[in-house]
Image (cartoon, rainbow, N blue to C red; front, top):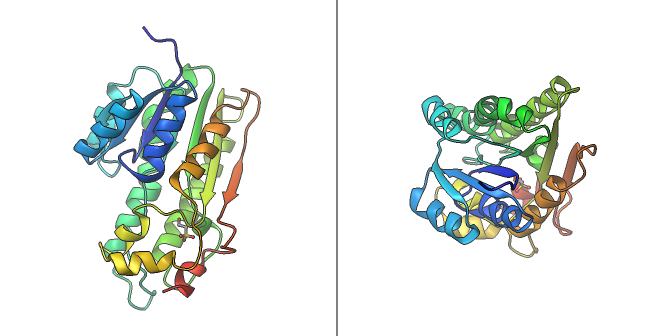
Length: 245
Ligand code: 8X3
Protein backbone atom coordinates (compact mmCIF):
# COMPACT_ATOMS: atom_id res chain seq x y z
CA UNK A 1 0.00 0.00 0.00
CA UNK A 2 1.18 3.48 -0.84
CA UNK A 3 2.40 5.59 2.05
CA UNK A 4 2.00 8.83 0.14
CA UNK A 5 -0.35 11.41 1.66
CA UNK A 6 -3.74 11.52 -0.06
CA UNK A 7 -5.09 14.70 -1.61
CA UNK A 8 -8.77 14.91 -2.56
CA UNK A 9 -9.68 17.53 -5.16
CA UNK A 10 -13.26 18.48 -6.05
CA UNK A 11 -14.23 19.94 -9.42
CA UNK A 12 -11.14 18.19 -10.76
CA UNK A 13 -12.24 17.56 -14.36
CA UNK A 14 -10.99 20.91 -15.68
CA UNK A 15 -9.49 24.29 -14.86
CA UNK A 16 -8.00 24.91 -11.42
CA UNK A 17 -9.10 21.51 -10.09
CA UNK A 18 -7.44 19.54 -12.89
CA UNK A 19 -4.26 21.63 -12.66
CA UNK A 20 -4.23 21.21 -8.87
CA UNK A 21 -4.54 17.43 -9.16
CA UNK A 22 -1.50 17.34 -11.44
CA UNK A 23 0.55 19.74 -9.29
CA UNK A 24 -0.25 17.78 -6.13
CA UNK A 25 0.68 14.48 -7.78
CA UNK A 26 4.01 16.05 -8.75
CA UNK A 27 4.42 17.26 -5.16
CA UNK A 28 4.16 13.65 -3.94
CA UNK A 29 0.47 13.23 -3.13
CA UNK A 30 -1.69 10.32 -4.16
CA UNK A 31 -4.62 12.15 -5.71
CA UNK A 32 -8.34 11.37 -5.62
CA UNK A 33 -10.29 13.41 -8.15
CA UNK A 34 -14.01 14.13 -7.89
CA UNK A 35 -16.33 15.75 -10.46
CA UNK A 36 -19.54 15.20 -12.38
CA UNK A 37 -18.06 14.85 -15.90
CA UNK A 38 -16.81 11.25 -15.77
CA UNK A 39 -15.01 11.15 -19.16
CA UNK A 40 -13.02 14.32 -18.61
CA UNK A 41 -12.28 13.31 -15.04
CA UNK A 42 -10.92 9.92 -16.10
CA UNK A 43 -8.56 11.65 -18.57
CA UNK A 44 -7.19 14.00 -15.93
CA UNK A 45 -6.85 11.15 -13.43
CA UNK A 46 -4.90 9.10 -15.97
CA UNK A 47 -2.55 12.04 -16.57
CA UNK A 48 -1.67 12.30 -12.90
CA UNK A 49 -1.93 8.62 -11.95
CA UNK A 50 -4.85 9.42 -9.66
CA UNK A 51 -8.22 7.88 -8.90
CA UNK A 52 -11.37 9.32 -10.51
CA UNK A 53 -14.59 9.16 -8.51
CA UNK A 54 -18.00 10.55 -9.47
CA UNK A 55 -18.98 13.53 -7.33
CA UNK A 56 -21.78 16.06 -7.36
CA UNK A 57 -21.14 18.35 -4.39
CA UNK A 58 -24.78 19.51 -4.47
CA UNK A 59 -26.04 15.98 -3.82
CA UNK A 60 -25.88 14.55 -0.28
CA UNK A 61 -25.91 10.92 -1.48
CA UNK A 62 -23.19 11.54 -4.04
CA UNK A 63 -20.97 13.16 -1.40
CA UNK A 64 -21.62 10.29 1.03
CA UNK A 65 -20.77 7.66 -1.61
CA UNK A 66 -17.63 9.62 -2.56
CA UNK A 67 -16.41 9.91 1.03
CA UNK A 68 -17.23 6.28 1.82
CA UNK A 69 -14.63 4.92 -0.62
CA UNK A 70 -11.86 7.30 0.50
CA UNK A 71 -10.03 5.53 3.29
CA UNK A 72 -7.41 8.19 3.94
CA UNK A 73 -7.47 11.97 3.43
CA UNK A 74 -4.58 14.29 4.29
CA UNK A 75 -5.58 17.21 2.10
CA UNK A 76 -8.95 18.35 0.80
CA UNK A 77 -9.07 20.97 -1.94
CA UNK A 78 -12.60 22.36 -2.13
CA UNK A 79 -12.48 23.68 -5.66
CA UNK A 80 -15.94 22.88 -7.09
CA UNK A 81 -17.89 26.10 -7.54
CA UNK A 82 -18.59 28.87 -9.97
CA UNK A 83 -20.72 31.80 -11.07
CA UNK A 84 -23.98 31.77 -13.00
CA UNK A 85 -24.93 34.95 -14.83
CA UNK A 86 -24.23 38.59 -14.15
CA UNK A 87 -27.73 39.71 -13.26
CA UNK A 88 -28.46 42.75 -11.14
CA UNK A 89 -30.42 42.30 -7.93
CA UNK A 90 -33.41 43.93 -9.66
CA UNK A 91 -33.32 41.22 -12.33
CA UNK A 92 -32.12 38.33 -10.16
CA UNK A 93 -33.04 34.82 -11.21
CA UNK A 94 -33.27 33.35 -7.73
CA UNK A 95 -32.97 29.79 -8.94
CA UNK A 96 -29.50 30.58 -10.26
CA UNK A 97 -28.63 32.33 -7.00
CA UNK A 98 -29.72 29.27 -5.04
CA UNK A 99 -27.60 27.05 -7.28
CA UNK A 100 -24.58 29.28 -6.68
CA UNK A 101 -25.12 29.07 -2.93
CA UNK A 102 -25.58 25.32 -3.14
CA UNK A 103 -22.40 24.56 -5.08
CA UNK A 104 -20.06 27.17 -3.56
CA UNK A 105 -21.18 27.21 0.05
CA UNK A 106 -23.11 24.05 0.87
CA UNK A 107 -20.96 21.99 -1.52
CA UNK A 108 -17.84 22.99 0.39
CA UNK A 109 -19.58 22.25 3.70
CA UNK A 110 -20.91 18.86 2.54
CA UNK A 111 -17.55 17.55 1.36
CA UNK A 112 -15.62 19.02 4.30
CA UNK A 113 -18.05 17.57 6.81
CA UNK A 114 -17.90 14.14 5.16
CA UNK A 115 -14.08 14.00 5.11
CA UNK A 116 -13.31 15.81 8.37
CA UNK A 117 -12.99 12.63 10.50
CA UNK A 118 -10.38 11.31 8.05
CA UNK A 119 -8.54 14.65 7.93
CA UNK A 120 -8.32 14.63 11.74
CA UNK A 121 -7.29 10.95 11.78
CA UNK A 122 -4.44 11.67 9.36
CA UNK A 123 -2.70 13.61 12.13
CA UNK A 124 -1.72 16.35 9.68
CA UNK A 125 -4.83 17.29 7.73
CA UNK A 126 -5.37 20.35 5.61
CA UNK A 127 -8.42 21.94 4.01
CA UNK A 128 -7.88 24.37 1.14
CA UNK A 129 -10.88 26.34 -0.09
CA UNK A 130 -10.73 27.97 -3.50
CA UNK A 131 -12.65 31.17 -2.90
CA UNK A 132 -12.46 34.30 -5.02
CA UNK A 133 -11.61 37.97 -4.94
CA UNK A 134 -15.42 38.19 -5.23
CA UNK A 135 -15.49 37.05 -1.58
CA UNK A 136 -14.04 40.43 -0.66
CA UNK A 137 -15.03 42.87 -3.37
CA UNK A 138 -18.60 43.32 -4.53
CA UNK A 139 -19.41 44.45 -8.07
CA UNK A 140 -22.60 45.32 -9.94
CA UNK A 141 -24.06 42.10 -11.32
CA UNK A 142 -22.00 40.06 -8.89
CA UNK A 143 -24.72 39.83 -6.19
CA UNK A 144 -25.41 36.11 -6.37
CA UNK A 145 -21.77 35.12 -6.77
CA UNK A 146 -20.52 37.76 -4.31
CA UNK A 147 -22.99 36.52 -1.71
CA UNK A 148 -22.01 32.89 -2.23
CA UNK A 149 -18.27 33.58 -2.12
CA UNK A 150 -18.58 35.88 0.92
CA UNK A 151 -20.50 33.08 2.65
CA UNK A 152 -17.96 30.45 1.63
CA UNK A 153 -15.17 32.64 3.05
CA UNK A 154 -17.11 33.04 6.29
CA UNK A 155 -17.55 29.28 6.57
CA UNK A 156 -13.83 28.78 5.92
CA UNK A 157 -12.92 31.14 8.76
CA UNK A 158 -15.39 29.50 11.11
CA UNK A 159 -13.85 26.14 10.27
CA UNK A 160 -10.39 27.48 11.09
CA UNK A 161 -11.65 28.61 14.50
CA UNK A 162 -13.53 25.40 15.19
CA UNK A 163 -10.49 23.26 14.35
CA UNK A 164 -8.11 25.12 16.62
CA UNK A 165 -6.38 22.47 18.70
CA UNK A 166 -7.00 19.75 16.09
CA UNK A 167 -4.31 18.61 13.63
CA UNK A 168 -6.06 20.20 10.64
CA UNK A 169 -5.03 23.41 8.89
CA UNK A 170 -7.41 25.61 6.91
CA UNK A 171 -6.48 27.90 4.04
CA UNK A 172 -8.55 30.15 1.79
CA UNK A 173 -7.08 30.95 -1.65
CA UNK A 174 -8.86 33.79 -3.41
CA UNK A 175 -8.03 34.15 -7.10
CA UNK A 176 -8.97 37.02 -9.36
CA UNK A 177 -9.40 36.39 -13.07
CA UNK A 178 -8.20 32.96 -14.12
CA UNK A 179 -8.71 31.88 -17.71
CA UNK A 180 -10.65 28.64 -17.35
CA UNK A 181 -14.22 27.63 -18.22
CA UNK A 182 -15.35 30.01 -15.44
CA UNK A 183 -16.68 32.75 -17.74
CA UNK A 184 -17.99 30.29 -20.32
CA UNK A 185 -20.12 28.67 -17.61
CA UNK A 186 -21.14 32.06 -16.21
CA UNK A 187 -22.40 33.16 -19.64
CA UNK A 188 -24.00 29.81 -20.56
CA UNK A 189 -21.51 28.96 -23.31
CA UNK A 190 -21.42 32.43 -24.93
CA UNK A 191 -17.77 32.30 -25.99
CA UNK A 192 -17.63 35.85 -27.31
CA UNK A 193 -18.88 37.24 -24.02
CA UNK A 194 -16.57 34.96 -22.04
CA UNK A 195 -13.52 35.95 -24.11
CA UNK A 196 -14.37 39.64 -23.67
CA UNK A 197 -13.82 39.27 -19.91
CA UNK A 198 -10.10 38.70 -20.51
CA UNK A 199 -9.67 41.04 -23.49
CA UNK A 200 -6.73 43.44 -23.26
CA UNK A 201 -5.25 41.83 -20.16
CA UNK A 202 -3.25 38.76 -19.20
CA UNK A 203 -5.32 36.62 -16.83
CA UNK A 204 -3.92 34.05 -14.43
CA UNK A 205 -3.75 30.45 -15.60
CA UNK A 206 -5.05 27.42 -13.74
CA UNK A 207 -1.41 26.41 -13.25
CA UNK A 208 -0.71 29.67 -11.40
CA UNK A 209 -3.32 28.72 -8.82
CA UNK A 210 -2.29 25.06 -8.79
CA UNK A 211 1.28 26.04 -7.92
CA UNK A 212 -0.06 28.14 -5.05
CA UNK A 213 -2.15 25.23 -3.78
CA UNK A 214 0.86 22.90 -3.93
CA UNK A 215 2.97 25.47 -2.07
CA UNK A 216 0.37 25.80 0.70
CA UNK A 217 -0.01 22.02 0.88
CA UNK A 218 3.71 21.46 1.34
CA UNK A 219 4.36 23.90 4.21
CA UNK A 220 5.50 22.25 7.46
CA UNK A 221 2.70 20.93 9.69
CA UNK A 222 2.93 23.81 12.16
CA UNK A 223 2.44 26.48 9.44
CA UNK A 224 -1.13 27.56 8.63
CA UNK A 225 -1.39 29.87 5.62
CA UNK A 226 -4.72 31.47 6.44
CA UNK A 227 -5.54 33.42 3.31
CA UNK A 228 -3.99 34.29 -0.04
CA UNK A 229 -5.40 36.72 -2.59
CA UNK A 230 -3.85 36.25 -6.01
CA UNK A 231 -4.71 38.35 -9.03
CA UNK A 232 -3.30 39.13 -12.45
CA UNK A 233 -1.05 42.19 -12.51
CA UNK A 234 -3.68 43.72 -14.83
CA UNK A 235 -6.49 43.43 -12.28
CA UNK A 236 -7.01 45.43 -9.12
CA UNK A 237 -10.51 44.35 -8.15
CA UNK A 238 -13.28 41.91 -8.98
CA UNK A 239 -15.45 44.75 -10.24
CA UNK A 240 -13.36 44.74 -13.43
CA UNK A 241 -15.33 41.71 -14.51
CA UNK A 242 -18.25 44.09 -14.82
CA UNK A 243 -16.28 46.96 -16.33
CA UNK A 244 -15.05 44.76 -19.14
CA UNK A 245 -18.47 43.62 -20.35
C1 8X3 B 1 -13.75 34.95 -10.05
C2 8X3 B 1 -12.88 36.12 -9.80
O1 8X3 B 1 -12.26 38.46 -10.62
O2 8X3 B 1 -13.21 36.93 -12.24
O3 8X3 B 1 -13.80 34.09 -8.97
O4 8X3 B 1 -14.62 37.89 -10.47
S1 8X3 B 1 -13.27 37.41 -10.83
